[in-house]
Length: 363
Image (cartoon, rainbow, N blue to C red; front, side, top):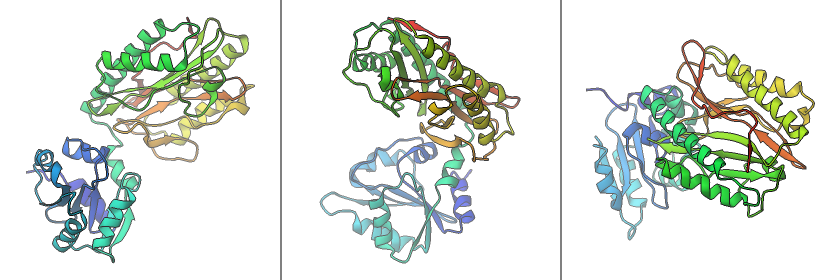
């Protein structure tokens, strides 16, 4: 029978540790096929280089945990007694000198519970190696992402058809979120970002109760989640009419986005793609409006490896999915971003997003 923990055992050994710890999150869900939320109750699975794993599980989660068909010992605990004794029982069962953890996922109080039970244990950040298991997407994961993107694009089309001058960012955000669920989203990949006018230049702007005016750019950055996989799309449109300057900036961003599609192929690095895209922006009259890198990996998390930026020489291989999202931002006036989700293929790349990118006027 295949050992489903094989890759984690290999990672632990490669990092020079005796085991890997997983907590609820993208890596946990990918391994077990079940999702657990994070709250004040710690749940952790420890996978040793050799032998059966073990887990600390809140008693109220035991029924759901049973669905994992877990092969090792489970130490449960109740709210009334606290979790310290469960971690001590884990330590007695599996004494460790070193442990690799998910540095961007494990919360401090869980790490403290582990080291409180085994004070001499060395904690190693295994984030890069652990999340590296998700670097190449499987066909099923790609299919789920395609579904999430289709849902998102259908919702965007419906929303833009309903935009009118005088609506607020917040009203449009509600329309967009409702449309994603009506088209089949299981969850939101992240909180939708809807911003008009100068607010569109704010980093990760959130919708406000401010009426949009004729001539305002309207930036929508959003995505549905389906089958555990995320979409992440941005389109910038114009309400009522578009000014000459906004149209000129838009065409530069679009050219940079298109350049990203043209150059992407297996064997290039994340640095190569960002350099090609950013060079288009730098060659324009608006180079002083560059604020961000080209993109990031996309999958079970909205942001994951590879990060498409200069200096990152991680090689792009067939099965990698990342966002191609150049933008130009001037907080005095407006920001424009165009974002596609790109799959690296054996021969080049494929845009998983297909929503039109020509300048569009709504309202």
